[in-house]
Amino acid sequence: MGSLKILLLIIIIPCLALGQEIKSTFFSRCEKFKEYDCQKLWDLFEKAHVNKDPCNISVEAYDRLIAAAPFKPECNKAMLWSLTEKWVRELKASRPECFQPLLKTPLASVLEGLTWCGKEGSKDTFATMREPKDNCNIQCNSISDSDSADYAASASGHVTALLNGSTDPPFNPSGVFACVEVPKLDPKKVQRLNVVIISENKAKSTCSHTCLNKLKEMLKGGISYTCKEVSESQIDDCINNESILCADCFSGSWVVRPSVLSFIVLCFLFMF
Ligand SMILES: *[C@@H]1O[C@H](CO)[C@@H](O)[C@H](O)[C@H]1NC(C)=O
Ligand SMILES: *[C@@H]1O[C@H](CO)[C@@H](O)[C@H](O)[C@H]1NC(C)=O
Ligand SMILES: *[C@@H]1O[C@H](CO)[C@@H](O)[C@H](O)[C@H]1NC(C)=O
Image (cartoon, rainbow, N blue to C red; front, top):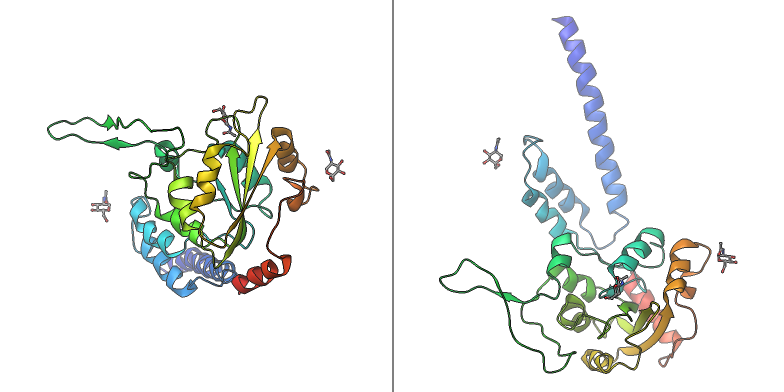
């Protein structure tokens, strides 16, 4: 009997100790994010798995936790993108100090840009047949993505948009970028949208593409706009060479209009 108790103690004590350690790590990490209510997040976190069969925890159990902790990019580090997922994944992995893009769930990237509908009396899914009037007709009816909307709404300072110069148009006109994210940029926080078009060998789209004018028109008043073309090898350098400064990743000079001072004040305001 005595040895059973000792055995139980040996098993339970490390378990409790581990639990405490997880809790303190959770809080010390969480508290770096000033906008999070860490106690609330911890309670949701515990609710998702405490007193449950560890082999039978639903994905939904963590959804409320994820919903309570939306991903917010730091000032100047928001990166929107369209048709450039490969580069964005690499930049996010190798230069997190420069860019904090939101990568979509696999399902969202599969569905991006598709429009679909059902049909009464049929079990099938149909592609919608509407032909766009021109190839940059912004079609937004079937897209909604609350993560992307929250992400774009919380961006501040300079926002980078990484677009693909090998496609025409350089972004998906019915995708999350054009339909959800750009309209959500908040002129009280965002000073400028810096469009970067990455050109591989043969460029099909440049900064003078007419679709980019539409994009510019979509920006709410007060947000300025710049565009530049950058070669693929320059992105590769930025991904592979950590001594390249964040500001030099898309080097060359931006066309800047508003004063640098107002921008610094903006960033400062939204950091606290
Ligand atoms: C798994 O959890 C669900 C919901 O909590 C429950 O309905 C189901 O019976 C559980 N399945 C098993 C195999 O325990
Ligand atoms: C850019 O577009 C081209 C043509 O559609 C495609 O082959 C390439 O993979 C795209 N680049 C990235 C990084 O997604
Ligand atoms: C990395 O970038 C630094 C600064 O621009 C440069 O001096 C250095 O030669 C680069 N290294 C490589 C391996 O390209």
